[in-house]
Length: 231
Image (cartoon, rainbow, N blue to C red):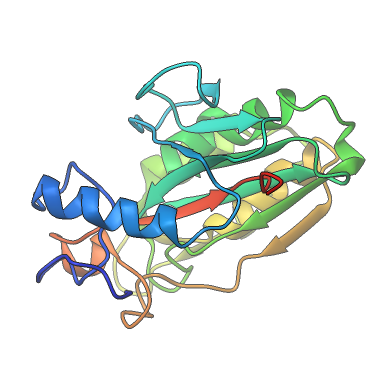
């Protein structure tokens, strides 16, 4: 998980303050991350609440939000995850960048659409990268989660959303959900089609990624994007 300072079960490079790790160690890990990034002055940390609020980086110290966006150079938009889906967005010219925390609740409620709406660029000029999340072979959910997504889907989305859920072979009314497919479907429905990434699985890849579903008590990774400040 990286050459940081956290002890087990946080495995060296935990970057979250809310998981029981020593706050001074987390601060040291964050400093180490910041120092390793050239052209970076500040990092926007969020109090993630599984909602749809998107903030402009730098306007609040620790906003209750699940995404941030900026035009400023040297200011990183960050989100923390350990199974939820992190998304990085930018326009084709690199003028605006954003990071989004898309847990299933936020994804169903429209956090992706809320982030795209903050961009000045047209949808066709927006690029999205889908970072490491729990994969469709391990993200087990109940019928309530499946129905929440189907209820939120438009008529054109509904078929692809339904296909993102595979019935569990031995548990009635349980499914395996594909967060990547759901996010892709939601993005394509608002004409964002330049979508990359999505080949990871936090649960399966314990050598690289934290996974709350796999380990319970564990750290959090940061997925971040920023425009380098000119030196």
